[in-house]
Every structure is written in structure tokens, then in C-alpha cells.
Image 1 (cartoon, rainbow, N blue to C red):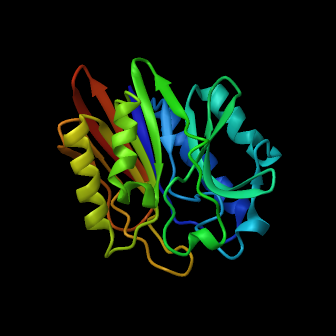
Image 2 (tube, rainbow, N blue to C red):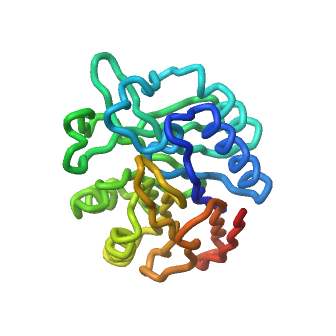
Image 3 (spheres, rainbow, N blue to C red):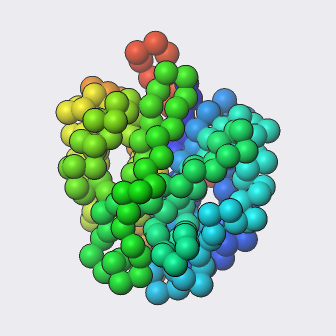
Length: 245
């Protein structure tokens, strides 16, 4: 099994340009054998609050069509984030695009202070993905600050925990510590994707990373810049490769 974390530098509110970067990195991940690629929080729009309603995607948004095509052609699961409107509610969510032309949705369960003004939290959209014998749970940013989130992933028999985040340089050490603790406590592999450039007018901390189910750090990216972190499972061991721009 090969997994990829995409570290990106979003262009604020520029959906078209951000999607082009998604296409490029999906193709690069697929060329390196990846079966799943995860992008940072709100990766398609960049992190937004006040403009989220104007930037929102629908559950069956046609702007996802080419990502669906790439997923099917390359047999890769794509996890990409956006504000998602479902009926009258706006969620901070992500699309889990499978190779069989299906799209499921994960929504952030534990919002960061201030996000509740613009977004609704929800436990109703809690996609569990499967690759080979692995069960994969999703998390978005502040989800990882609540220990119950990882505990619930473990109770769902997840063997891999995939986090899409936007953490600052000051916040990323604590994010790493929390994720390493979850990996060790719940015997889950943990893959995390963070921005490597500014979003929402604020710097990001980069350092997208992967820990095995013993809590050992296998690899991490630099604190800035874009690229891919690829990890490959060999029996119970993992190897890694980083592709920087």
C-alpha cells in the first residue's frame, strides 16, 4: 500500500488555480503508485470563513468531475477539502473521491473557535475508507485537538488515521505531538497534510508527516513549500519518499 500527503500553497479564493495544483499532484502521486492522496484543510479554496458561503461546493458539484476522472483512471482515492453546502447547512468538509466514480463526504466534527459563526459541525458525515485490509478514518484540523476523535476512529476499527490540517508554525509542534500520541495509543498509522504556504492571510507550518502504528515518525516534509510525502507499506514496515517542488 502506498499513501501520499500533498503539501500545497493555496491561492486564496482561486478555485481554478488550486484545482490545477490538485490535478498535478494527483498525477504525480499516481505515477509513484499511490492508492490514496490527502490534501490539507479546505485545499480547493484555501482556508476561508467569511467568504465560505460564496466559495461553497455542492455535494454533486460539477467542478469535481476531473478529479473523479483522475481517481478512476489512476485507481486512487483523492481527499480534497472545500466548504460544502448540503441542503441549507454549510459544512467545513472534504470530498473523498473513489476510483469507482463515487464521492463520499467527511465533515469537520470539532470546529475551531470562530468557525461556528460560518460552519455547522456534524457527526453525520463520517466516511470510512478501505484500501486492501486497511480501514481509514478522516480528520480535519481541530478534530485532532479533541482526543475523542481519534478514540472514535479506533472504536471504528480504523488502522489508519488521515488528517487534513491548517496549522501555523507555532501550532505544528503540538499537532505533531497529538498525532504521534494517537498513533502510539491506538496502534493506528497516521498521515497528515498541512499547507506549506500562507492561507487566510496567515502563515502555515508545513511539516506534513507520517507516523507508523507504533508512534514512530517515518518522515516529514519541510516547514514550507509544496510537494508530496509518499509512504509505502512492506509487510509491517514503512519506507518513505519526499518529492519537493
